Every structure is written in C-alpha cells, then in structure tokens.
Length: 140
Image 1: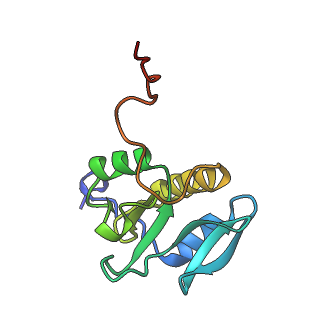
Image 2: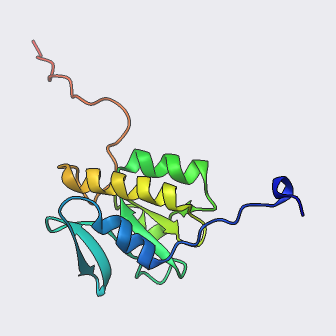
C-alpha cells in the first residue's frame, strides 16, 4: 500500500504517558487522591485517575476552569466528558484511549496553570446575571 494512503495510527496513551508528562512539569509530584494515583502541584490536586463509579474505565480527571471544561466537552465529546458527580468540580474527564499525546500534554499544562492559580476547586459556577446589587431605595 502506498505511504500516502495509509492511515497514521494514533499513539497510545496510558497512565505511564500521563505520569511522564505530568512529572515533567515544574514542582509536580506523584501522590494519591481518594485512594487513586494522582499528580499534585505543591499539594494541590492537578490530575488523578477517576474513582467515581459513574466514570468510564481508563478515565483521567484533570482540574481546569469551568469555562475551559465546557469548551473541551462541546468541541470533542468523544475525548472529554462529564458525569453528574463531577459537575460541581472544576475538572474534566478524559478518555485516555481517545486523547492524542499532544492534546494530553496541553491539557496537563492547563491543569498545572489551574492548580497554580487561586481559583476555587469546588462549587457552582458563578451565576449569570447582575454582579452587583443596587443600593436600597430610601422612602420618604
């Protein structure tokens, strides 16, 4: 078969790949979270193996901003997804069998940036609508 008509195989991503990429980032150390392998930046969770039974096998949880998560899930739902248990957490679920190593590297970098920020880790997203309350009116 001519080279031009062959499909390039997607490089296989395993937890070993995750480990290699995560530990290459500054100040990241391997740890545990909820009894599962995890990577933390100065004690703050960056990524871990999904432990909730709703998550698919072979899933990685990466802590990122809610807006970034929503964008990833909308753009590539076959790679990135969410289950009810994780909705209130600033994270995305990743199917390791479907992510390209370059995309995983970028995602872990985003997780590092998020873990390095002072962003809240849990809780509902900021509500849409007015961000200030008007002063009470005075009655005459």
